[in-house]
Length: 145
Ligand SMILES: Nc1ncnc2c1ncn2[C@@H]1O[C@H](COP(=O)(O)OP(=O)(O)O)[C@@H](O)[C@H]1O
Ligand SMILES: [Mg+2]
Image (cartoon, rainbow, N blue to C red; front, side):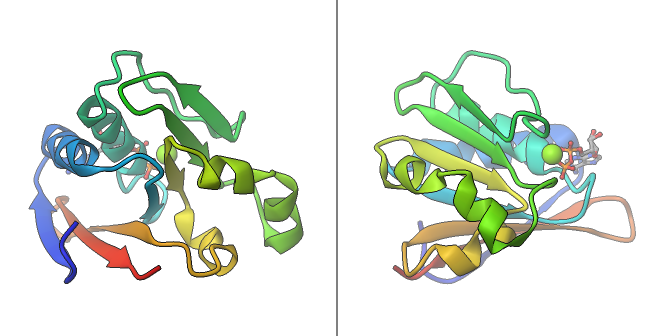
């Protein structure tokens, strides 16, 4: 991933998926991707693209109720959704440390909730915001390890 932030705009879910696919294709084993943005921003759409970029054929569904969903692939993917998880204790109780330290790629929706506990682990942060015309602004940046 580039060092400075990369700013992209997406006019459709397909474009967001394609951006995710490019991100996924560039990820190394063990990468952590934190997705930020309001409900309906397109985090799950982007995660589907990332999965495709990792060579995952399975359909990705939002893991809101399961919190973590695992998918086998060239690099295995753990798709995490922290929407319903609040506070450092609840986050710690999920036992994500092993996942984050493992060889797979971890993509985290509502990833800002995990940032305080990353403790200097490098990550890719993707922030999605809605533009007045209904498009999405997508900012991709590396968090230093
Ligand atoms: N440019 C765009 N990128 C992504 N999603 C878009 C875009 N334009 C419209 N949408 C719609 O917004 C919704 C995003 O949903 P989702 O990915 O589940 O959001 P989140 O996971 O952030 O809550 C989908 O219904 C999608 O069709
Ligand atoms: Mg979602």
